[in-house]
Amino acid sequence: MLLQDAHRFGQKLLRRRPLGPREETDHHTAGCLDTLDLVIIGVRRMLGAGVHILVGAVAKYIAGPAIILSFLVAALSSLLSGICYIEFGARVPRSGSMYLYSYSIMGQVYGFIIGWNRILSLTVGTACIARAWSYTFDSLIGNRISQALERTFSLYMPYYLAKYPDFFALGLVLLLTGLLVLGVHVLPQVNKVFMGINILVLSFIIVSGFITGDLHNWKLTEQDYTLNTSESEDIYSLGPLGSGGFVPFGLEGILRGAALCFYMFIGFDSIVTTGEKAQNPQRSIPISIVVSVLICFVVYFGVSAALTLMVPYYQIHPDSPFLQAFLHVGWGHARYVMAIGILCALSSSLLNTMFAMSWLIYTMAEDRLLFRFLAQVNARTRTHIRVIMISGNLAGVLALLFHFSDLMDLMSLRSLLANLVVDFSVLVLRYHSDQNLSKNQKTEEETEMELVVKERSLDSVLEASTLSFLKSLWFPPSTIPTRKSGQIVYGCAFLLVLLLIILSLILAQRPSQVFSGDPVLTTVAVLLLLLITGVTVIIWRQPQDPTALHFKDLPYTLDMGSDTT
Image 1 (cartoon, rainbow, N blue to C red):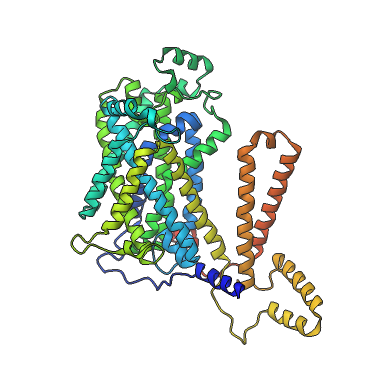
Image 2 (cartoon, one colour):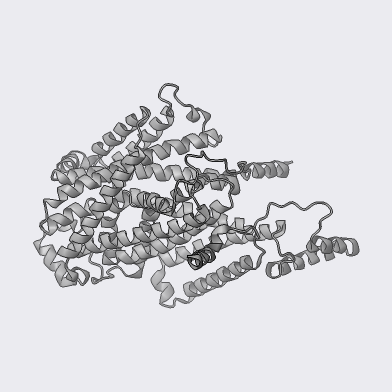
């Protein structure tokens, strides 16, 4: 009885949300977007607030000038995740978000995890942007707000919270919460204007950085650091020197920086979400994702290079890096024009993030994964007042109490976790088949097992079953996915994730001992690599879903298009 209850509970956890085929879109919107429109959507989502609030801290404390290499690693990882997202969307009969894909394909528990992960991301993202807005405005007025609050409250703040409560950021979040309750949202035309302003500001930063920058800032030594320490009025504001040079914090700093910079490439999901309005989604979506990531990488590369050329990396201001950089090079008046553009970009991103957060909570409440009262809509304003108030107040508290760097670490961890779940889902889905065999259809494996049951004893059956299972790991009896092959891939994928986590923990905690030849840790790392390779080969040997995915034929389509022209 207990096993039956546990089995039913497990089935409920893996219950999937039924999805019908793509609904016919309205004739005014169907096929109204071309590849360029999708690229603009992706760039607008990626070039949001992240570039203004993350570059300074990563360059100063984690990667130094090698932050441009961190962006390269993050861009490659994001590109691979984008391809997984394309395949995920191609296997679902309608467009939707990461939450919808996980719920409909992998089951209720995956949708619940992804949904809460996304809610956490949007809530922390709102707090981050509000803090960045406060830092930028405070920098324009000579840091008077932060200095006054720090003098008043710093003695009463615990060490794990920010140095002072940011009441300005709290007030900003509450103000926008009130606007959302009244039904105010950012129009698409306003978003485009803000994106244009943001691109102009970033272009100005890149050009100014290469004009006023000094290549010596990529070759800093301990003598330069000592000189800057003696000249600086506040030596505690200087960051660590590391080993100096272009890569002051080594390979570890580049990889740590890439983990944080990965957050800045999140946004390609919006391309897949709006893909059903594209004229040729099978061709436009993959191209637009690749082009969007490349464009954003070029911008991030230029901005981070310009910043580290203008200011020694250990002198970068982590909270408002660009405004302080222009002060450092003597272009103080230019920072006022830049601040307007930065605040416009942050304001648009903040309001859009809060709107998306309330809408996701409402959707999960509609699916009964959250309390049903959260799905109620106000009859007069046609808004989700309870959801907006709860999520807005929570984000406001985070912006009030937590330090900016802690919020950014949580954001990056959330982004990596969400994409890990999507990549895992794609891996399982590729080797999964929903086709049910009829009673008259028997696979070669089932026929063989029936003969074994009839002719041999129970011990022989168990032995044959074990041998058959081991044989199927390397030589699957069917060329199409079966229930057994799907279970093998599912288990191997979980094992693969577990092995990778263990290996990552070892490399993160004891990197020097592993690479220096410590007999125990090096042996464990090698064994883990061998196991990871073996599990990967087992997954590769299993039959894949033969369903044709149009985006895989993209190079052939492009070649045919070039031949015809």
